[in-house]
Length: 146
Image (cartoon, rainbow, N blue to C red; front, side):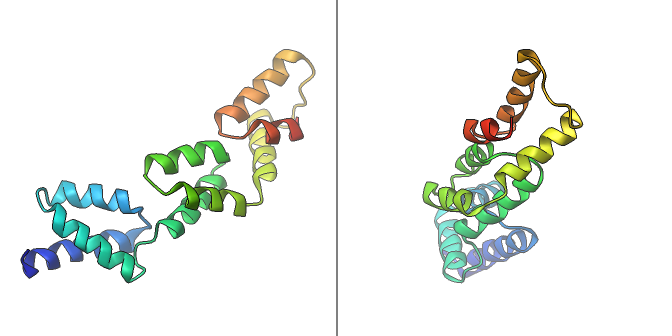
């Protein structure tokens, strides 16, 4: 392992990390695409970033969850997205439990989509439930607001 290669990969990793939060897996994919066949160096770079608290999957999970929740997505969809980014399930569950506005988010999404129309029959109720379910809200949340 050359120090020049390490410095090159490390600087690129810092550049990427300075733009937004990344999961370790995401950053690994980006660096591997840019510097193929340097996986041992990339692993060392990622370890150094974690040690220096520049790269943190727990912080990433919290920030990603907050961002997606503000856009109207529910806990199940966000959990699935974080799993696809290879974030540890412990961090995911902690972030989901810490977030308190799921009911409010579901109500806001219903308001935006259906303009406050209260479902009067089975078909319209199911349409609203399906909408919230597709947005990633749990059945408990859906039942509480409908």
